[in-house]
Figure (cartoon, each protein chain N blue to C red):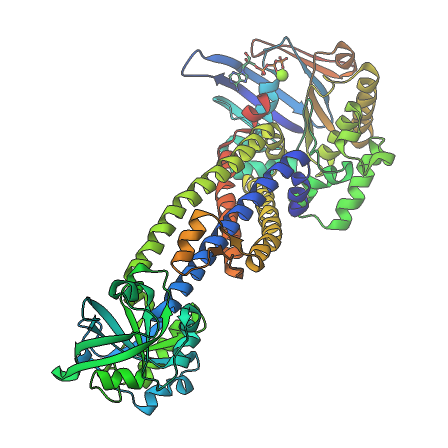
Length: 405
Length: 228
Ligand SMILES: Nc1ncnc2c1ncn2[C@@H]1O[C@H](COP(=O)(O)OP(=O)(O)OP(=O)(O)O)[C@@H](O)[C@H]1O
Ligand SMILES: [Mg+2]
């Protein structure tokens, strides 16, 4: 009966109920949408950045990341190549040998990064083949180079020219070689554009005097959620005294920080949003308590205990909150789903800037149950807390005074 | 048997600012089965007296005994249960819970007493019939006239079989026809069911039907007249 009383009271002032439920609904809708887009955009961004070059996880010889030198290269054992068979989350293992070299044409000299890669495997993660703007991608054993456009520009080289590379190889051996330029690659990132030179892995190993050695293994995973389980099994399967395993957060601390800063900014927006909602709901509760003072007085007079009355009123507000939160979830699901399937697409300068860096300017919403649930729960908790107000009022209420008003 | 006894009851409002002595030493005894009107000019303390008798307000001095119980000694919570069991209230207006039907309103107090559903149902119907609302049981207060609402309030007050009914100006908002009708019902319940009524009023037609008239002036009993 108390339930029935509470339920009917909700419908007593239909317009107010509708307004309150609608404001809760929109709060949930807005907060959910915002969070879904924000998380989705960052997910997409991180995904792009990470797969651009680094990969979600890398394996090096212990200490390599601290002091990135060719001397910390390690043998590419078969077991390492086949890590994917032992760790199901790993889709590809990208072996690389990376170091710096001087590139020259006789007249010009420029510092470059010479990376030996396994062409097909590399392409599977970074889509390097798609970045070839002129010429063609190379094959496994081809003694040829892919040169970033910026490097070629600095050195005045064009397709078919020969690039001469000089460096210090493994354990101090002299490294020198000349390679025909088979393709030009374009990177959005100016950083990469002015320093990247790719060779097929065996060719680079020969150049560095490091046959059979690599400096890093980049691991291709499907998604961020796979990082944790992958790391867990890697720690079990690898000799951690010999190798270091790093995820993108270790390798790209700036990106992590940027995300944190962005999230912190959003917290303020959420707080403001929730404050607005809270005031709205509180207004309703306040009005309702005031309006029903006389009725509360009558109820206590005829023998209803304060706790029974308080419970009924609390229940009423809770039901209202629940109703709004539920409707909010129902309303936001199709909306978020829509933007999940049809991501927001930016155009204009912003998009151009992003595309310059090789990213699509799209913001897909993530569609995950926990977002709806946490937002709805939050709004519901706020309502439940605000519903304590009439309880305090009722506890202190004197029926005689209430009925004199 | 006495159902209500007050001795030297004093009630002071606003003791800190300008004190108002709403009751200034009221001695009153009400016997079972009486049909008593409390009358007096506005501000003479009628409402205050009914509130003190009903345990809604506590006196500053004096004793109030209801059905042999010293209600001043009871805690607030015990007093609520006591009210629910022993006292029926009818207020001037807006007695009923607007979202409940007439029947549910009458059942409500019995529900708070955890009476079984069948008993609640039967008693609510019986009482609503007694106040002449057989055909309005499932109507909500907003669908009833003021007089009908007050009759439902009387039925509700009777539901827990209280020792007596306190009614503060029950006819104040009613037209003369509804007033007569409500008084008929109250008088019949008093005669046939021996229900004790104590009600305050300004209305001469209501005063005329009372069998005892207690007049308050400045918070004191000025006259107390029992009629044939
Ligand atoms: N809660 C209160 N606070 C302050 N003063 C009060 C309060 N209740 C009653 N009074 C004062 O006590 C006196 C008696 O009031 P009471 O309501 O009992 O009179 P009444 O006889 O019922 O009057 P009416 O015929 O107008 O209903 C009045 O002067 C009133 O102003
Ligand atoms: Mg009064």
